[in-house]
Amino acid sequence: MSLPSILVDIARNPWLSVGGTVVLGATVAKVSNNDRAHAYYASLAKPPGNPPTWALGPIWGTLYGMLGYAAHLLALDSSVEARSALGLYYIQLALNFVYMPIFFQVQSREVALADIVAITGLTWKLVDDTRTLSSTVHFLLVPYAIWMLYSTYLNIGMVFLNPKKSKTA
Image (cartoon, rainbow, N blue to C red; front, side, top):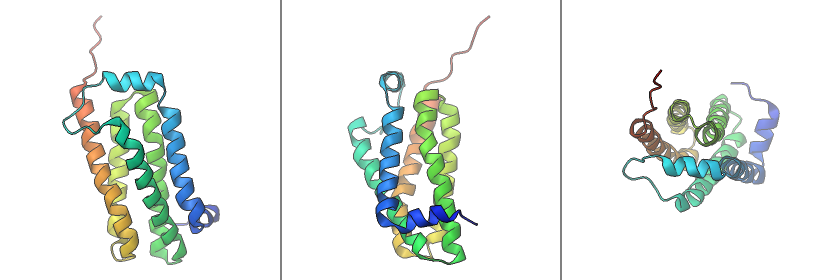
């Protein structure tokens, strides 16, 4: 996979890679979570095991930091395999950053579910691809991959527990 050099350069800088990922994630969360979004989320029935909202900031901040550092380590490796993994990282990260606007602003649980399933699949592919490439990168990605499975469960639960109302003529 051929990546634009700017993406490799950003990831090579640990401050930009880690800090940029955390700041972008926090910015997307802040923009996506207004009063309308809070009211929408509060109105939804949630599956068992739904985390308290106060826990999400620290969890996501930590995961984004780990993702950014994993990307940094991948960028330091110039092998074809590492570049391919870095490309996969950026694709799943872009999908991750559009999830919150889809779920909270567009309020489409079904489209958000398709997005999160794609993120989760790509993340587990990335975990598998880095298994022999770098044990450090691999272990930095595993907590995120597990969290994405859990997040997918939550999204599936919210789709099924909150069916769309049928329109009557």
